[in-house]
Length: 246
Image (cartoon, rainbow, N blue to C red; front, side, top):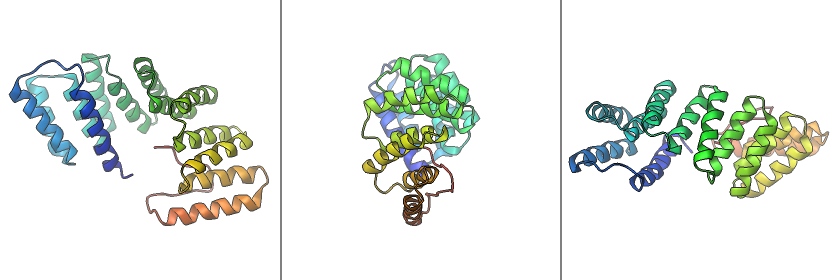
Protein backbone atom coordinates (compact mmCIF):
# COMPACT_ATOMS: atom_id res chain seq x y z
CA UNK A 1 0.00 0.00 0.00
CA UNK A 2 1.22 3.51 -0.76
CA UNK A 3 2.65 5.25 2.31
CA UNK A 4 0.06 8.06 2.38
CA UNK A 5 -2.82 5.63 1.82
CA UNK A 6 -1.54 3.41 4.62
CA UNK A 7 -1.28 6.33 7.04
CA UNK A 8 -4.75 7.61 6.18
CA UNK A 9 -6.26 4.19 6.92
CA UNK A 10 -4.29 3.97 10.16
CA UNK A 11 -5.25 7.51 11.12
CA UNK A 12 -8.95 6.73 10.70
CA UNK A 13 -8.63 3.76 13.07
CA UNK A 14 -6.76 5.87 15.60
CA UNK A 15 -9.35 8.63 15.41
CA UNK A 16 -12.06 6.07 16.16
CA UNK A 17 -10.12 4.70 19.11
CA UNK A 18 -9.35 8.14 20.51
CA UNK A 19 -12.92 9.34 20.14
CA UNK A 20 -13.99 6.57 22.49
CA UNK A 21 -10.95 7.04 24.73
CA UNK A 22 -10.53 8.77 28.06
CA UNK A 23 -10.22 12.29 26.74
CA UNK A 24 -11.06 15.20 29.02
CA UNK A 25 -14.24 17.05 28.22
CA UNK A 26 -13.67 20.21 26.22
CA UNK A 27 -15.75 23.04 24.90
CA UNK A 28 -17.83 22.42 21.80
CA UNK A 29 -15.88 25.02 19.80
CA UNK A 30 -12.54 23.42 20.76
CA UNK A 31 -13.73 19.94 19.80
CA UNK A 32 -14.96 21.21 16.45
CA UNK A 33 -11.55 22.74 15.73
CA UNK A 34 -9.80 19.46 16.56
CA UNK A 35 -12.21 17.47 14.41
CA UNK A 36 -11.64 19.89 11.54
CA UNK A 37 -7.85 19.50 11.82
CA UNK A 38 -8.23 15.71 11.85
CA UNK A 39 -10.47 15.85 8.75
CA UNK A 40 -7.84 17.96 6.97
CA UNK A 41 -5.18 15.39 7.84
CA UNK A 42 -7.41 12.52 6.68
CA UNK A 43 -7.84 14.36 3.38
CA UNK A 44 -4.06 14.25 2.89
CA UNK A 45 -3.53 18.00 3.35
CA UNK A 46 -0.62 17.38 5.67
CA UNK A 47 0.99 20.85 5.71
CA UNK A 48 -2.35 22.51 6.42
CA UNK A 49 -3.05 19.98 9.18
CA UNK A 50 0.32 20.68 10.81
CA UNK A 51 -0.48 24.36 10.82
CA UNK A 52 -3.91 23.78 12.35
CA UNK A 53 -2.60 21.48 15.08
CA UNK A 54 0.19 23.97 15.84
CA UNK A 55 -2.39 26.71 16.45
CA UNK A 56 -4.42 24.40 18.71
CA UNK A 57 -1.31 23.44 20.67
CA UNK A 58 -0.46 27.11 21.19
CA UNK A 59 -3.86 27.73 22.77
CA UNK A 60 -4.05 24.50 24.81
CA UNK A 61 -1.35 21.82 24.65
CA UNK A 62 -2.86 18.31 24.88
CA UNK A 63 -1.33 14.90 24.38
CA UNK A 64 -3.61 14.02 21.50
CA UNK A 65 -2.79 17.27 19.65
CA UNK A 66 0.94 16.59 19.84
CA UNK A 67 0.22 13.02 18.75
CA UNK A 68 -1.76 14.08 15.67
CA UNK A 69 0.83 16.67 14.68
CA UNK A 70 3.54 14.04 15.19
CA UNK A 71 1.56 11.69 12.98
CA UNK A 72 1.42 14.39 10.30
CA UNK A 73 5.18 14.94 10.56
CA UNK A 74 5.65 11.19 10.13
CA UNK A 75 3.55 11.32 6.95
CA UNK A 76 5.88 14.06 5.70
CA UNK A 77 8.97 11.99 6.46
CA UNK A 78 10.07 14.38 9.20
CA UNK A 79 10.86 11.66 11.72
CA UNK A 80 12.74 13.75 14.30
CA UNK A 81 9.94 16.34 14.46
CA UNK A 82 7.49 13.45 14.87
CA UNK A 83 9.57 11.97 17.71
CA UNK A 84 9.62 15.34 19.47
CA UNK A 85 5.82 15.59 19.31
CA UNK A 86 5.24 11.97 20.35
CA UNK A 87 7.59 12.53 23.30
CA UNK A 88 5.57 15.57 24.38
CA UNK A 89 2.37 13.54 24.05
CA UNK A 90 3.88 10.80 26.22
CA UNK A 91 4.97 13.32 28.84
CA UNK A 92 1.38 14.57 29.04
CA UNK A 93 -0.33 11.16 28.84
CA UNK A 94 2.13 8.33 29.57
CA UNK A 95 -0.50 5.57 29.49
CA UNK A 96 -1.41 5.80 25.78
CA UNK A 97 0.20 2.87 23.87
CA UNK A 98 -0.34 4.47 20.45
CA UNK A 99 2.01 7.30 21.37
CA UNK A 100 4.86 4.87 22.04
CA UNK A 101 3.95 2.78 19.00
CA UNK A 102 4.21 5.65 16.55
CA UNK A 103 7.40 6.96 18.17
CA UNK A 104 8.83 3.46 17.81
CA UNK A 105 8.01 3.54 14.10
CA UNK A 106 9.78 6.89 13.77
CA UNK A 107 12.85 5.53 15.59
CA UNK A 108 12.83 2.49 13.29
CA UNK A 109 12.92 4.73 10.24
CA UNK A 110 15.92 6.55 11.70
CA UNK A 111 17.62 3.15 12.25
CA UNK A 112 17.60 3.72 16.02
CA UNK A 113 16.58 0.17 16.83
CA UNK A 114 17.36 0.17 20.55
CA UNK A 115 15.11 3.18 21.10
CA UNK A 116 12.44 1.57 18.92
CA UNK A 117 12.63 -1.70 20.89
CA UNK A 118 12.19 0.21 24.14
CA UNK A 119 9.04 1.91 22.83
CA UNK A 120 7.50 -1.28 21.42
CA UNK A 121 8.28 -3.04 24.71
CA UNK A 122 6.25 -0.36 26.47
CA UNK A 123 3.41 -0.86 23.99
CA UNK A 124 3.13 -4.59 24.77
CA UNK A 125 3.25 -3.82 28.50
CA UNK A 126 0.36 -1.36 28.15
CA UNK A 127 -1.55 -3.42 25.57
CA UNK A 128 -0.47 -7.11 25.73
CA UNK A 129 -3.00 -8.17 23.08
CA UNK A 130 -1.49 -6.07 20.29
CA UNK A 131 0.12 -8.46 17.80
CA UNK A 132 1.58 -5.78 15.54
CA UNK A 133 3.56 -4.36 18.45
CA UNK A 134 5.14 -7.78 19.07
CA UNK A 135 6.05 -8.00 15.39
CA UNK A 136 7.59 -4.53 15.31
CA UNK A 137 9.45 -5.30 18.53
CA UNK A 138 10.79 -8.45 16.86
CA UNK A 139 11.90 -6.38 13.84
CA UNK A 140 13.75 -3.95 16.12
CA UNK A 141 15.45 -6.78 18.03
CA UNK A 142 16.40 -8.48 14.75
CA UNK A 143 18.08 -5.34 13.43
CA UNK A 144 19.74 -4.74 16.79
CA UNK A 145 21.43 -8.15 16.63
CA UNK A 146 19.15 -9.94 19.10
CA UNK A 147 17.74 -12.84 17.02
CA UNK A 148 16.61 -14.97 19.99
CA UNK A 149 14.60 -12.11 21.47
CA UNK A 150 13.24 -11.35 17.99
CA UNK A 151 11.96 -14.90 17.46
CA UNK A 152 10.52 -15.09 20.96
CA UNK A 153 8.54 -11.88 20.52
CA UNK A 154 7.47 -12.78 17.00
CA UNK A 155 6.18 -16.15 18.21
CA UNK A 156 3.89 -14.21 20.55
CA UNK A 157 2.62 -12.09 17.68
CA UNK A 158 1.97 -15.17 15.52
CA UNK A 159 -0.03 -16.80 18.33
CA UNK A 160 -2.31 -13.77 18.32
CA UNK A 161 -2.55 -13.40 14.53
CA UNK A 162 -1.68 -16.71 12.86
CA UNK A 163 -3.10 -15.51 9.52
CA UNK A 164 -0.59 -12.68 9.07
CA UNK A 165 1.74 -13.65 6.22
CA UNK A 166 4.18 -10.85 7.02
CA UNK A 167 4.92 -12.31 10.43
CA UNK A 168 5.97 -15.67 8.95
CA UNK A 169 8.08 -13.92 6.32
CA UNK A 170 9.83 -11.89 8.98
CA UNK A 171 10.52 -14.98 11.10
CA UNK A 172 11.84 -16.70 7.98
CA UNK A 173 14.21 -13.78 7.43
CA UNK A 174 15.46 -14.04 11.00
CA UNK A 175 16.14 -17.77 10.68
CA UNK A 176 17.79 -17.31 7.27
CA UNK A 177 20.03 -14.50 8.52
CA UNK A 178 21.45 -16.92 11.07
CA UNK A 179 21.89 -19.86 8.72
CA UNK A 180 18.82 -21.91 9.62
CA UNK A 181 17.64 -22.14 6.01
CA UNK A 182 15.42 -25.18 6.50
CA UNK A 183 13.35 -23.42 9.15
CA UNK A 184 13.37 -20.29 7.01
CA UNK A 185 11.90 -22.22 4.05
CA UNK A 186 9.19 -23.60 6.32
CA UNK A 187 8.19 -20.08 7.36
CA UNK A 188 8.31 -18.77 3.79
CA UNK A 189 6.03 -21.67 2.79
CA UNK A 190 3.54 -20.54 5.44
CA UNK A 191 3.80 -16.92 4.28
CA UNK A 192 3.20 -17.86 0.64
CA UNK A 193 0.28 -20.10 1.53
CA UNK A 194 -1.36 -17.13 3.22
CA UNK A 195 -0.36 -14.56 0.58
CA UNK A 196 0.34 -16.17 -2.77
CA UNK A 197 1.18 -12.97 -4.66
CA UNK A 198 4.03 -11.74 -2.41
CA UNK A 199 7.18 -11.46 -4.57
CA UNK A 200 9.44 -10.83 -1.58
CA UNK A 201 8.40 -14.11 0.07
CA UNK A 202 9.17 -16.00 -3.15
CA UNK A 203 12.47 -14.15 -3.57
CA UNK A 204 13.59 -14.84 -0.02
CA UNK A 205 12.51 -18.48 -0.19
CA UNK A 206 14.50 -18.80 -3.40
CA UNK A 207 17.61 -17.47 -1.69
CA UNK A 208 17.13 -19.87 1.23
CA UNK A 209 16.63 -22.80 -1.17
CA UNK A 210 19.82 -21.85 -3.02
CA UNK A 211 21.71 -21.96 0.27
CA UNK A 212 20.34 -25.48 0.78
CA UNK A 213 21.63 -26.49 -2.66
CA UNK A 214 18.13 -26.80 -4.12
CA UNK A 215 19.04 -24.67 -7.11
CA UNK A 216 16.27 -25.63 -9.53
CA UNK A 217 13.58 -24.76 -6.97
CA UNK A 218 15.49 -21.61 -6.08
CA UNK A 219 15.57 -20.38 -9.68
CA UNK A 220 11.86 -21.11 -10.10
CA UNK A 221 11.05 -19.05 -6.97
CA UNK A 222 13.26 -16.11 -7.94
CA UNK A 223 11.88 -16.08 -11.51
CA UNK A 224 8.32 -16.10 -10.15
CA UNK A 225 9.23 -13.29 -7.74
CA UNK A 226 10.45 -11.17 -10.67
CA UNK A 227 7.24 -11.85 -12.58
CA UNK A 228 5.12 -10.80 -9.61
CA UNK A 229 7.25 -7.72 -8.98
CA UNK A 230 6.89 -6.63 -12.61
CA UNK A 231 3.13 -6.30 -12.08
CA UNK A 232 3.67 -4.05 -9.06
CA UNK A 233 6.17 -1.23 -9.77
CA UNK A 234 6.43 -0.37 -6.05
CA UNK A 235 7.68 -3.86 -5.18
CA UNK A 236 11.33 -4.70 -5.76
CA UNK A 237 13.42 -7.79 -5.12
CA UNK A 238 17.16 -8.14 -4.72
CA UNK A 239 19.56 -11.07 -4.94
CA UNK A 240 19.61 -11.33 -1.13
CA UNK A 241 16.98 -11.42 1.59
CA UNK A 242 14.87 -8.31 1.29
CA UNK A 243 11.78 -6.53 2.49
CA UNK A 244 10.24 -5.96 5.91
CA UNK A 245 6.62 -6.85 6.61
CA UNK A 246 5.44 -3.22 6.53
